Image (tube, rainbow, N blue to C red; front, side, top):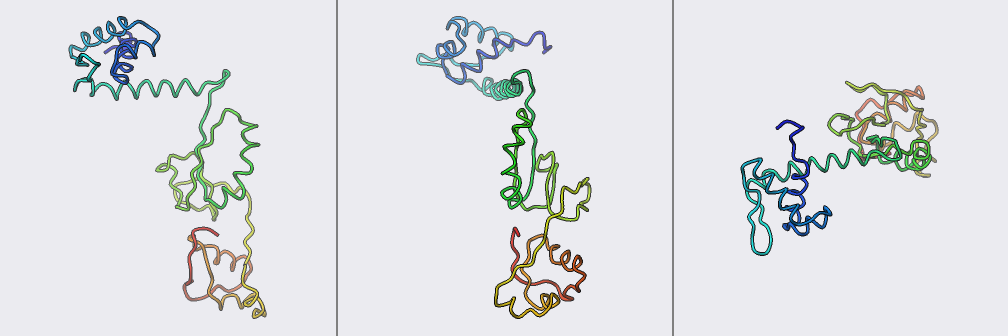
Length: 221
């Protein structure tokens, strides 16, 4: 059907009537008379050459044809409503979909979001936290923040800042360490990324363990 011929008022009357299963309650919502709603629905049925409702003594029942049309109409009105909601004070609201790891979100990002909202009041943040490898397309993200070298296939990476990487151990182990090289003799706890210890050894100029790293793997560090 051509857009100029779309019976928008009739579609609104149909959707409201199907939701309330009543022409009367639909009329109250739309602020028109019950006769006007009934007339609009009848006009839509005649246009489509189908029956959208069964008129019962105590209300309406949506027919099979009406059930087929209803989700399309409802989704279309919802999308129009969402689009109109984006306009506020003459501005268009935008959504920034951002993905990061939970530790970074809690420790750095979330405390700074209030100031960001003050600077960009018409941008809504949709924040997703997980420790998976970045898949911007599958997760529907605009940007992702991860720790690492930035050499990720199919993605453009920009270094935001350098993150310090420190070695922690118990006082008992610390007392047994005579030099940094001794660290390699102990079980090294690591994160799921598996690159922190190699990066640390490379940065300090120390020789990394020759055998594969073993021990507990944590989902954050």
